[in-house]
Image (cartoon, rainbow, N blue to C red; front, side, top):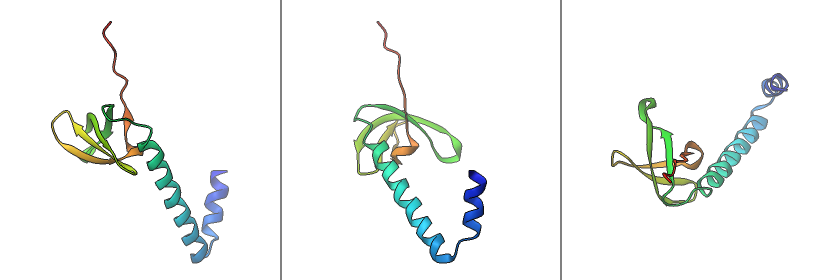
Length: 93
């Protein structure tokens, strides 16, 4: 199937490609929004920061498709929801 899609893309006109690009952007926005709203303030999350460094932190605010995260190092990052991974921390019983 992947090869069929690639073949179809290479046969498309500029207008057809533009339509596909707009559809992909819309779908990505939908995914960012859904992922952002699946989190709650106070959740622990991780994400890839600059230079590939894994950052961990706590959700401070949920925006439309971005999430404001305060890292363990005290920095504040505005991260797309789909770039975050929720951390399930062990509870000491």
